[in-house]
Image 1 (cartoon, rainbow, N blue to C red):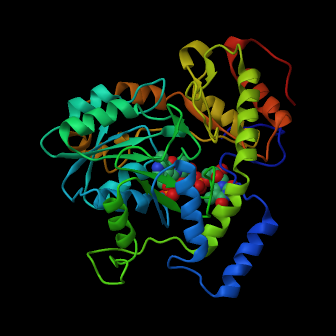
Image 2: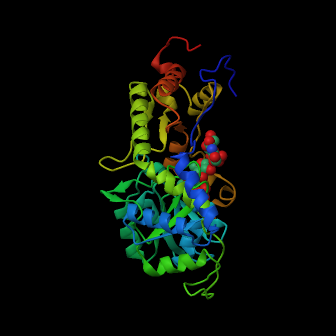
Image 3: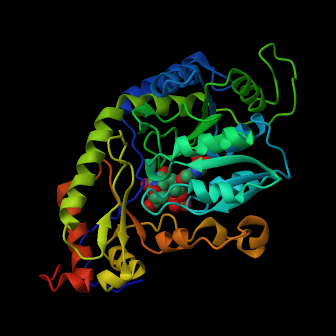
Length: 391
Ligand code: T4K
């Protein structure tokens, strides 16, 4: 940890502070659930939340879950992927993407990414397709949509399901269409740190009627609409309190995007001209939720490594996060068995993971805080030249 005598910020600035929305509305909804004494198992708030997410994404079905990790597992099973099958996933993601599969015996095989978008490199995905490949799981990392057209063409050619981990991508678009309606299914996260949160939660969104029906049964002990056991299942449903939070947060969605977009712009202005430092852009000509502000620090050009800047920020109470370093292929259990999980080196993932740093955003911070954070970064970069002391 750095030794900063006086931190610039007295209170910590977080990445991922929850967006709560109108607290009075939230409590009204929670009180309604308590009055009804209907707390879980497909209650009215969950059904309303599912309808809102389906409408927002333009997809026919939304099946909520207790989190996205379990959502990925259920979506994979509902798409017919079985234990022992291989699924190609990018290594540049939160480890949940890979662990969700590994935990149920599906083998994640890591592909490299396109450095500009951070998403799966379609050519590399194709090179990894082998006799045991039964699926592709793309990740719209930081809300940047995958090359959906390229991955869809591969999935069609090889006759395998295509899923998307859309944990970061609610409110984002691909070629003008909302994320949520692509591939066999897309999975959102509504964890507390996500753009729209339900304390904990997730959703499988799909246009496939049968996949939706299977997923709906699987998340509730395999019970079908007539309450008969139709197959194996687990318990992965969302409860009414979580849906109350989700509905309330959704009401604030437009203003959240506006705040995040403004903050993103302030960071771009504050770091403009700092050699070797850039704010990762959102996809051009698309809608984005701007939930993550991710900078890249090229150590050779900036004259300082990302980790040093991170330590300096932490010393000033700016709780930046190294999302996502290292790549999953270098995490246990995958790095011990690279011949199974990552048959090739992943040079672009490793270059990217060495540069990225997520910075605080959201309604809790504004231009003054961002200007302070940018000043800390500018002073940390020798290539930028000496600046006035902060403290
Ligand atoms: N796929 C992708 C691509 C994902 O990024 C994730 C989750 C998933 C799948 C799985 O989704 P879920 O199954 O969880 O629904 C955080 C989140 O916990 C994790 O959900 C998220 N990705 C990941 C990118 O970030 P951690 O371990 O870095 O941090 P955490 O949650 O302890 O706290 C992060 C920051 O947020 C801290 O500075 C404190 C602040 N915070 C956190 C919580 C929970 C708050 O201020 N309030 C809170 O309630 O993983």
